[in-house]
Length: 578
View (cartoon, helix red, strand yellow):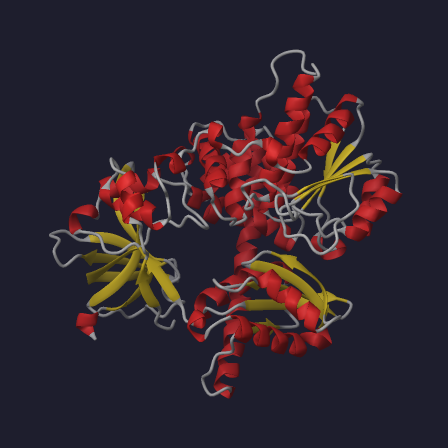
């Protein structure tokens, strides 16, 4: 792994003053994340943005309420990732809570039916007798699918959060905070957040009409699922998403989550009573995603829908086995991609391209996104990984770096080279596309040209932002616990990273790829435990005596005792040892 440029985050002195009463390190951390004052840190439900601001919601709620009251057959079509699975589970659970008698879901195999609401998916829905079709976490680009559903006599509600294209589907209602002119203040809602808001509006409408004989159902009971989908989809944790995630985590810690989330956490060795956002993102989310990547998401959805703990454990074990298969495939693909890139870079006499496009005829299209993430992390380049999709087409998944909006880059290529890309969609940081196998070289050159046009050379250099050094007295249980409780941390609201020099007292390989370390601050009397995940992949096998480490101050729960532990994100020789 090449050397990164390390820079300390800038912080507002004025903001830091308004955060008096907090631990000094937390004041500095919050000020560097542009937290303007204590009110910006509120995570109570009253802080959520008003549902009335989300465009399209009144019409969607009207259609759902009508379908519930009239006993119509409702079919929800979800995406095949964790956001899609949680969106489907939230929808099904909420509709049943509100009295729907005929509600079902459809998440077709991605390899047979493609992405989103395609016409073949609509055919399946029609055969199942759907009268109202609802998309969650997809649909905004499904023009042909929505047209087919309307032609088949269905009402259609599209709920999505992906960026829309130049044309919108002709649905009866569309709810998407990213539609042009939509006044909703939180543009980073995940798909599960969007459908949660729609269901809240539906509940309010049914209550207003006197539908409920007793007390209306409490949809807050579903926030564990909303939190999981939000974190797993790696959307930015703005203030609104932080409320959704924190409220969901509180339910999980209180033992009030669905049996499926509880089983997945325990199977991954995470304590539900002490769950944090990273547990959802790194333990639960990947196991759910594995089902959609390798087979179909139905086993994941069933795991989230069951109320039987025994059944949840069984389904969680199936998901865990799929995740193990996914990891094996991913590691093999990553090694092959690295070998090919090394050969390519050698041919270029050491110059790394501005963008990376890699493909192999034998790769699995369900894992291309993960491999793209790994390569992006390693080389700090926008990366697209392709696998065969069938019928001479390639399925690509891309991951970007700060400064390059990947979906906009694909749109630019589509404008400059009409017909080169068959279809595309996504976000700033991640996008997917399909193209003909014979067009890969042209696409690679086009992406390289756009990246060089849009980015300055220094933006292609890896940079790590830190929150500065910690004093030896701060590297302990008190601050580690305060940071843990100060979350939820995540995309757009990153967990603090600190920067110190340490003496390496010992290091050993654990789990084949990781390093377990004992480090000591130069001014400290006692060492501290540290772990560097994927250390061997990053070339950190042999360490000098003195190192500069960029790390998170975390906690390790071992045999009933909490101990501080540094989670090393980057390590290099210190200035004194060079």
